[in-house]
Structure formats: structure tokens, C-alpha cells
Amino acid sequence: MTRLLKPDPLRTALARCAASSSFGFPIPMHEPADDARLDANADAEPGAERPLNRRERGVVLARIQALMEFWGITVDDLLQDTPAPEPVLVPDLPPKYRHPTTGESWDGQGPQPDWLRRALLKEGMRVEELRQAALAPPPPLVEPAADDASPAADDTPPPGH
Image (tube, rainbow, N blue to C red; front, top):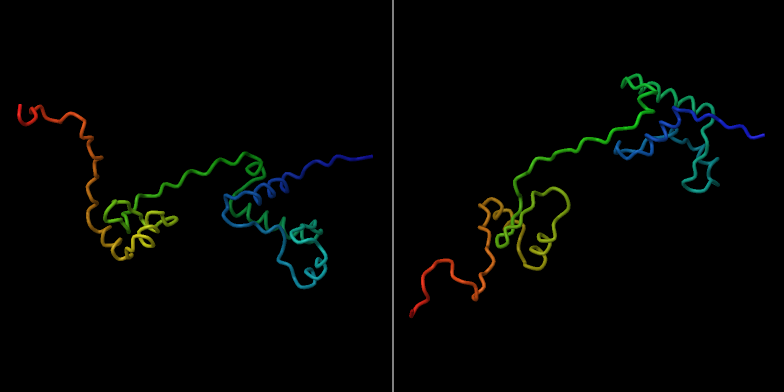
């Protein structure tokens, strides 16, 4: 006869928290392994988890309970849906690098933009040139060239009329 086990809310909540990427760091599910334990698991498939024994489970639960008490977290808090984290607003930083011709700029945060790689590797610019250009005011925006067939902006007649 198969017996259905009621899920352990604390273990379920812990597994949900451990799988969550919102912490930014992995949550250890057991104590650090010692040499004897490593030898005992040498035949195990890499990445395979083994169930915690009674002592390990007690240690983990004691750590969890201590952290819950410290942070004032209840089991009910763990069972509730976790709200989405508020977006972090990053203030606009002044540009550190600017292309002197195109006016494209980069504040030095995040991945290096393509225009910067292109300027350094293909256009032969130096980093110091791009830093100096960032200190100067940005170049004026270049308007697209007007089509010769378009009428003139002012109402003066063409020469000779």
C-alpha cells in the first residue's frame, strides 16, 4: 500500500528559496563536505544529490530556524508568493568616453559598446582621445542632408526670375 506523504512546508519553502536567483548567491543545502564524506561519495555521479541524513538535516534546520528568528520570518511568510523585487533605478552617469565625430558616448558601466570597439580597433583612435572628447560638450546633431529636389525653405524665387 502506497502512503501519500504530506509535503513539509519548511523543506518546500527552502527548496523554493534555494532555486531562486534573487539572492545572488547559492544557498548551501548541507554542511561543507569533509574528506571521509568525499571518499564515500566518490562513486556518485557528479552533480547528483544524496538525501540528508538525520544529523545533517538537524544542522540545516537549526541554521534555517536561527536565520528565520534573526530576520523575523515565519513559515507563513515563506509560503506566501514572493513579490517581484522593485527595479533598481540607476542614475544617469556622465559619459566617460565619447566618439568625437559621431557623438556616441558610454558611461563605462556595462558591456563595452560596439562603437567603442570599432573606434579603437578599426578607426585607430586611442582611449585618451575618447576620454578627452567626453570632457568637451557633445557635437551638434547632424541633420540629414536635404534632397536637392525639395523646395527651398524660404520663399525667394530662384535666381534669374
